[in-house]
Length: 91
Image (tube, rainbow, N blue to C red; front, top):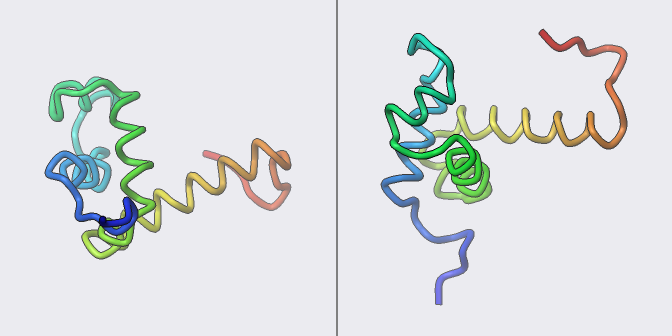
């Protein structure tokens, strides 16, 4: 049996990673574009994205996007737990 972290990406997971890489180039709100382009809800999009970026296959597929999503997720988690750092400003 293949470990969940080792299984290949599904077509939906690849599409979500592709969208995350380029969403800012599409005019309009991100959530509206998630629905329009991918046909899924924003919460499903976020669940799928954050589940996918934990896997080695996602990093092999798009290392820059996966590293950025992981870093942003870790920063948000750290900010929730420790409070905002004085040396980092949020746009």
